[in-house]
Length: 293
Image (cartoon, rainbow, N blue to C red):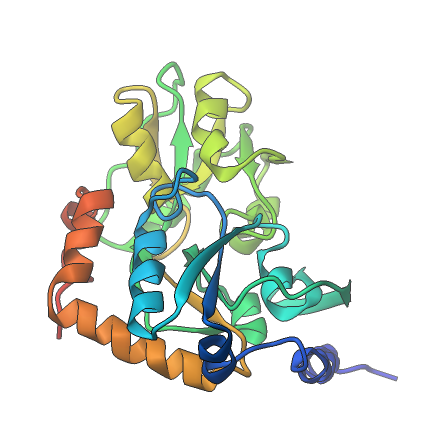
Protein backbone atom coordinates (compact mmCIF):
# COMPACT_ATOMS: atom_id res chain seq x y z
CA UNK A 1 0.00 0.00 0.00
CA UNK A 2 1.37 3.43 -0.91
CA UNK A 3 1.50 5.85 2.01
CA UNK A 4 0.95 9.56 1.46
CA UNK A 5 3.96 10.87 3.40
CA UNK A 6 2.88 14.50 3.21
CA UNK A 7 -0.54 13.56 4.58
CA UNK A 8 0.97 11.63 7.47
CA UNK A 9 3.26 14.55 8.31
CA UNK A 10 0.31 16.96 8.22
CA UNK A 11 -1.76 14.64 10.43
CA UNK A 12 0.93 14.40 13.10
CA UNK A 13 1.76 18.09 12.82
CA UNK A 14 -1.88 19.01 13.43
CA UNK A 15 -1.97 16.59 16.36
CA UNK A 16 1.10 17.88 18.11
CA UNK A 17 0.05 21.50 17.70
CA UNK A 18 -3.24 20.67 19.37
CA UNK A 19 -1.45 18.82 22.18
CA UNK A 20 0.88 21.76 22.73
CA UNK A 21 -1.95 24.28 23.17
CA UNK A 22 -2.08 23.76 26.93
CA UNK A 23 1.50 25.04 27.26
CA UNK A 24 1.34 27.63 24.49
CA UNK A 25 0.44 31.27 25.07
CA UNK A 26 -1.17 33.82 22.81
CA UNK A 27 -1.20 37.58 23.34
CA UNK A 28 -3.79 37.52 26.13
CA UNK A 29 -1.86 35.04 28.27
CA UNK A 30 1.42 36.88 27.63
CA UNK A 31 -0.08 40.20 28.73
CA UNK A 32 -1.70 38.57 31.76
CA UNK A 33 1.63 37.11 32.89
CA UNK A 34 3.42 40.31 31.90
CA UNK A 35 6.42 38.74 30.11
CA UNK A 36 7.32 38.15 26.45
CA UNK A 37 9.84 35.31 26.15
CA UNK A 38 12.11 35.87 23.15
CA UNK A 39 13.80 32.70 21.90
CA UNK A 40 17.10 33.58 20.28
CA UNK A 41 20.25 31.90 19.00
CA UNK A 42 23.44 34.01 19.16
CA UNK A 43 24.03 34.59 15.48
CA UNK A 44 25.64 37.34 13.40
CA UNK A 45 24.29 40.74 14.48
CA UNK A 46 20.72 39.58 15.05
CA UNK A 47 21.54 38.26 18.52
CA UNK A 48 25.06 39.23 19.55
CA UNK A 49 25.10 37.26 22.81
CA UNK A 50 26.06 40.27 24.90
CA UNK A 51 22.59 41.78 25.20
CA UNK A 52 22.49 43.46 21.81
CA UNK A 53 21.47 42.69 18.25
CA UNK A 54 18.93 43.74 15.67
CA UNK A 55 16.31 41.17 16.68
CA UNK A 56 16.95 41.73 20.38
CA UNK A 57 16.21 45.44 20.04
CA UNK A 58 13.14 44.79 17.86
CA UNK A 59 11.73 42.34 20.43
CA UNK A 60 12.46 44.75 23.27
CA UNK A 61 10.48 47.44 21.45
CA UNK A 62 7.67 44.96 20.72
CA UNK A 63 7.46 43.93 24.37
CA UNK A 64 7.14 47.60 25.32
CA UNK A 65 4.50 48.08 22.63
CA UNK A 66 2.27 45.32 24.07
CA UNK A 67 2.91 46.44 27.65
CA UNK A 68 5.00 43.58 29.01
CA UNK A 69 8.49 42.85 30.28
CA UNK A 70 11.08 41.53 27.80
CA UNK A 71 12.91 38.30 28.60
CA UNK A 72 15.62 36.77 26.42
CA UNK A 73 15.78 32.96 26.35
CA UNK A 74 18.96 31.66 24.75
CA UNK A 75 18.63 28.49 22.70
CA UNK A 76 20.38 26.76 19.80
CA UNK A 77 19.64 26.07 16.13
CA UNK A 78 19.06 22.42 17.00
CA UNK A 79 16.38 23.20 19.60
CA UNK A 80 14.91 26.63 18.86
CA UNK A 81 11.80 25.31 17.07
CA UNK A 82 11.36 22.65 19.75
CA UNK A 83 11.46 25.33 22.44
CA UNK A 84 8.64 27.22 20.75
CA UNK A 85 6.38 24.30 19.83
CA UNK A 86 6.91 21.89 22.71
CA UNK A 87 7.88 19.04 20.38
CA UNK A 88 11.14 17.70 19.01
CA UNK A 89 10.94 18.83 15.41
CA UNK A 90 13.37 18.49 12.52
CA UNK A 91 13.60 18.69 8.77
CA UNK A 92 12.77 15.74 6.53
CA UNK A 93 13.52 17.29 3.16
CA UNK A 94 10.77 19.88 2.76
CA UNK A 95 8.61 18.13 5.35
CA UNK A 96 8.63 18.05 9.15
CA UNK A 97 9.58 15.09 11.30
CA UNK A 98 8.42 14.85 14.92
CA UNK A 99 10.34 12.57 17.29
CA UNK A 100 9.10 13.40 20.77
CA UNK A 101 8.13 15.99 23.35
CA UNK A 102 10.02 19.05 24.55
CA UNK A 103 9.32 21.84 27.04
CA UNK A 104 7.83 25.11 25.76
CA UNK A 105 10.41 27.76 26.65
CA UNK A 106 9.38 30.82 24.66
CA UNK A 107 6.72 32.74 22.77
CA UNK A 108 8.48 33.94 19.62
CA UNK A 109 11.64 33.16 17.61
CA UNK A 110 13.69 36.11 16.36
CA UNK A 111 17.33 35.52 15.40
CA UNK A 112 17.58 35.93 11.65
CA UNK A 113 15.58 32.79 10.86
CA UNK A 114 15.35 32.01 7.15
CA UNK A 115 11.92 31.05 5.82
CA UNK A 116 12.30 27.46 4.55
CA UNK A 117 9.55 25.09 3.31
CA UNK A 118 9.86 22.67 6.23
CA UNK A 119 9.79 25.51 8.75
CA UNK A 120 6.66 26.94 7.13
CA UNK A 121 4.89 23.65 7.88
CA UNK A 122 5.77 23.94 11.56
CA UNK A 123 5.63 27.71 12.10
CA UNK A 124 3.87 30.85 10.99
CA UNK A 125 6.15 33.68 9.91
CA UNK A 126 5.81 37.44 10.04
CA UNK A 127 6.24 39.61 6.98
CA UNK A 128 9.88 39.31 5.82
CA UNK A 129 12.26 41.33 7.98
CA UNK A 130 15.63 40.79 6.28
CA UNK A 131 16.94 39.60 2.90
CA UNK A 132 19.43 36.77 2.65
CA UNK A 133 21.00 34.28 0.29
CA UNK A 134 23.46 31.42 0.65
CA UNK A 135 26.92 32.14 -0.69
CA UNK A 136 29.96 29.91 -1.23
CA UNK A 137 32.98 31.18 0.72
CA UNK A 138 36.65 30.28 0.70
CA UNK A 139 39.87 31.47 2.35
CA UNK A 140 42.39 33.96 0.92
CA UNK A 141 44.97 31.29 0.05
CA UNK A 142 42.52 29.26 -2.07
CA UNK A 143 43.15 28.95 -5.78
CA UNK A 144 39.40 29.22 -6.39
CA UNK A 145 38.31 32.52 -7.92
CA UNK A 146 34.89 34.21 -7.76
CA UNK A 147 32.56 33.63 -10.69
CA UNK A 148 31.82 36.42 -13.14
CA UNK A 149 28.14 37.35 -12.61
CA UNK A 150 26.05 36.63 -15.70
CA UNK A 151 23.03 38.70 -14.76
CA UNK A 152 20.98 35.52 -14.33
CA UNK A 153 20.92 34.06 -10.84
CA UNK A 154 20.24 30.47 -11.92
CA UNK A 155 23.25 30.52 -14.26
CA UNK A 156 25.39 32.01 -11.49
CA UNK A 157 24.34 29.21 -9.11
CA UNK A 158 25.32 26.57 -11.69
CA UNK A 159 28.70 28.26 -12.19
CA UNK A 160 29.30 28.47 -8.43
CA UNK A 161 28.43 24.80 -7.89
CA UNK A 162 30.94 23.81 -10.59
CA UNK A 163 33.68 25.27 -8.39
CA UNK A 164 32.90 22.56 -5.82
CA UNK A 165 33.95 19.68 -8.07
CA UNK A 166 36.65 17.76 -6.23
CA UNK A 167 36.55 20.20 -3.29
CA UNK A 168 35.27 19.98 0.28
CA UNK A 169 32.46 22.11 1.69
CA UNK A 170 31.19 22.78 5.19
CA UNK A 171 27.47 23.09 5.97
CA UNK A 172 25.20 22.83 8.99
CA UNK A 173 22.06 20.73 9.14
CA UNK A 174 18.69 22.05 10.38
CA UNK A 175 19.69 25.52 9.18
CA UNK A 176 19.56 27.37 5.88
CA UNK A 177 23.14 26.13 5.35
CA UNK A 178 22.11 22.48 5.12
CA UNK A 179 23.81 21.18 1.91
CA UNK A 180 20.85 18.89 1.19
CA UNK A 181 18.67 21.95 0.52
CA UNK A 182 20.80 22.83 -2.50
CA UNK A 183 21.39 19.34 -3.97
CA UNK A 184 25.13 19.43 -3.33
CA UNK A 185 25.09 15.64 -2.97
CA UNK A 186 24.76 15.51 -6.76
CA UNK A 187 28.19 17.12 -7.18
CA UNK A 188 31.54 15.39 -6.78
CA UNK A 189 32.32 17.20 -3.54
CA UNK A 190 33.10 16.15 0.03
CA UNK A 191 30.36 17.44 2.34
CA UNK A 192 31.01 17.91 6.06
CA UNK A 193 28.35 18.94 8.57
CA UNK A 194 29.88 21.48 10.92
CA UNK A 195 29.37 20.88 14.63
CA UNK A 196 30.23 24.38 15.80
CA UNK A 197 28.12 27.54 15.67
CA UNK A 198 27.33 29.43 12.49
CA UNK A 199 29.63 32.28 13.52
CA UNK A 200 32.51 29.79 13.59
CA UNK A 201 32.22 28.78 9.92
CA UNK A 202 34.22 31.71 8.52
CA UNK A 203 37.09 31.20 11.00
CA UNK A 204 37.06 27.47 10.17
CA UNK A 205 37.69 28.29 6.51
CA UNK A 206 40.42 30.78 7.38
CA UNK A 207 42.04 27.98 9.41
CA UNK A 208 41.89 25.58 6.44
CA UNK A 209 39.33 23.17 7.94
CA UNK A 210 37.81 22.73 4.45
CA UNK A 211 38.16 24.17 0.96
CA UNK A 212 34.88 26.07 1.12
CA UNK A 213 31.86 26.71 3.31
CA UNK A 214 28.28 27.78 2.87
CA UNK A 215 27.53 31.10 4.53
CA UNK A 216 24.42 33.25 4.40
CA UNK A 217 24.45 36.97 3.66
CA UNK A 218 24.15 38.37 7.22
CA UNK A 219 26.96 36.21 8.58
CA UNK A 220 29.07 36.89 5.48
CA UNK A 221 28.64 40.66 5.90
CA UNK A 222 29.73 40.41 9.53
CA UNK A 223 32.73 38.23 8.57
CA UNK A 224 33.81 40.53 5.74
CA UNK A 225 33.77 43.50 8.12
CA UNK A 226 35.48 41.62 10.96
CA UNK A 227 38.20 39.95 8.88
CA UNK A 228 38.81 42.13 5.81
CA UNK A 229 40.79 40.34 3.12
CA UNK A 230 40.57 37.00 4.94
CA UNK A 231 37.62 35.45 3.08
CA UNK A 232 36.48 35.40 -0.54
CA UNK A 233 32.88 35.23 -1.75
CA UNK A 234 32.88 32.85 -4.73
CA UNK A 235 29.25 33.10 -5.78
CA UNK A 236 25.65 32.21 -4.89
CA UNK A 237 24.39 28.75 -3.97
CA UNK A 238 20.75 29.82 -3.59
CA UNK A 239 18.33 32.35 -4.97
CA UNK A 240 17.45 35.27 -2.71
CA UNK A 241 15.74 34.14 0.48
CA UNK A 242 14.01 36.00 3.29
CA UNK A 243 14.18 36.00 7.05
CA UNK A 244 11.31 36.63 9.44
CA UNK A 245 10.03 36.26 12.99
CA UNK A 246 8.62 32.80 13.83
CA UNK A 247 5.37 32.16 15.74
CA UNK A 248 3.32 29.16 16.79
CA UNK A 249 0.41 28.59 14.47
CA UNK A 250 -1.99 28.89 17.42
CA UNK A 251 -0.96 32.45 18.35
CA UNK A 252 -2.98 34.61 15.89
CA UNK A 253 -3.42 37.57 18.25
CA UNK A 254 0.31 37.77 18.95
CA UNK A 255 1.03 37.58 15.23
CA UNK A 256 -1.44 40.36 14.47
CA UNK A 257 0.00 42.57 17.22
CA UNK A 258 3.49 42.09 15.79
CA UNK A 259 2.29 42.79 12.24
CA UNK A 260 0.85 46.16 13.36
CA UNK A 261 3.99 46.96 15.36
CA UNK A 262 6.38 45.98 12.55
CA UNK A 263 4.52 48.14 10.05
CA UNK A 264 4.70 51.03 12.50
CA UNK A 265 8.48 50.86 12.93
CA UNK A 266 8.91 50.52 9.18
CA UNK A 267 6.85 53.62 8.52
CA UNK A 268 8.44 55.81 11.21
CA UNK A 269 12.00 54.89 10.14
CA UNK A 270 13.06 53.27 13.42
CA UNK A 271 13.49 49.84 11.83
CA UNK A 272 15.68 51.30 9.08
CA UNK A 273 17.79 52.96 11.78
CA UNK A 274 18.26 49.65 13.62
CA UNK A 275 19.26 47.86 10.41
CA UNK A 276 21.76 50.66 9.70
CA UNK A 277 23.21 50.19 13.17
CA UNK A 278 23.84 46.47 12.81
CA UNK A 279 24.11 45.88 9.04
CA UNK A 280 25.13 49.15 7.32
CA UNK A 281 26.45 47.31 4.23
CA UNK A 282 23.22 45.43 3.50
CA UNK A 283 21.69 48.42 1.71
CA UNK A 284 24.42 48.17 -0.93
CA UNK A 285 23.38 44.59 -1.74
CA UNK A 286 19.58 44.78 -1.28
CA UNK A 287 18.49 48.43 -1.53
CA UNK A 288 14.94 47.65 -2.65
CA UNK A 289 14.13 45.34 0.26
CA UNK A 290 14.09 48.13 2.82
CA UNK A 291 12.05 50.57 0.73
CA UNK A 292 8.79 51.16 2.57
CA UNK A 293 5.79 50.69 0.28
